[in-house]
Image 1 (cartoon, one colour):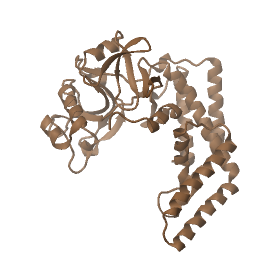
Image 2 (spheres, rainbow, N blue to C red):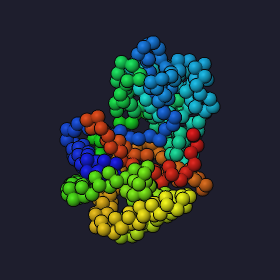
Image 3 (cartoon, rainbow, N blue to C red):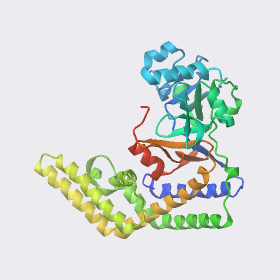
Image 4 (cartoon, helix red, strand yellow):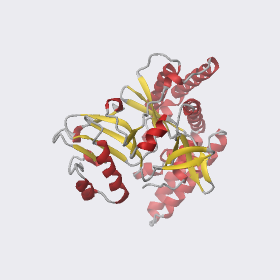
Length: 385
């Protein structure tokens, strides 16, 4: 809603209605995927021009100087260090999968980054590609596959088109068509929605959320469009409060705060705006420019006062969207077979998966537990860069 105004709000409602069909075990045009916190992102497949197998990053799609790596020598030419080593593993083993076309996936581990350890009394294979540490019991079917493999990956995207530079991304990858080889653990990221069940009471609660959010979108719609139109990174828009809304919400996540009391959130939002604009004003050298920018800030503060009820309605809508999203995430988290942890100075702390992506008609919407994953992503040091 902060990116696209009322259209974004309507899209969120549309996705929620599609999700209701899936949760009610009805026929749906959408499908859900689990997001994996893997790295790096690898693009690989058969180059439609040379018909040779390649690996690379998204730079393979460059219109000028695409970085396709058909050999380890080419990888060394373009890349170095840890990334080069992971791409060499990818070239060595993904070329055996019999991939047709071009796909993309997130690397989870190589045999040098996968470890075996005991966590909370359970023997696990663990690996940490980015923020989250994943664990799978060594006696689980997937665990046995992980233990035998040299590399693990989640393929989540395929591409269509006659040339790499013109290809378009599409959700999903045909992993069931791949050759089964012990060196590669290809982890399925399709979320088994058929195993999710909402009780009659839960479904009624979910329906109430949708109805409320839909009404609020109608009420807030014109104001949301107004905020989108006023925001920007240059000129006068740089100092409008609408430009600071997304940074404000991110700052709340970094400080592990959720919206509970709307009045308190309004107060925090204004304080955040004042703090950030004061820093911007301090950089200005000339008196005339400083006076102009101060007037923009005063005008924006007055704008909030004049539209206080509209801002409160927007914050309430944001809160409701967060609540219904969390209701879904809590259900989906119970489906995961992998254990998920974050590394702290006191050892492992249990956390939730990164999130989920609902795809429908070529569009998608993400369900991410921002107070869990986004907080960890903001605050914990990454192992891989």
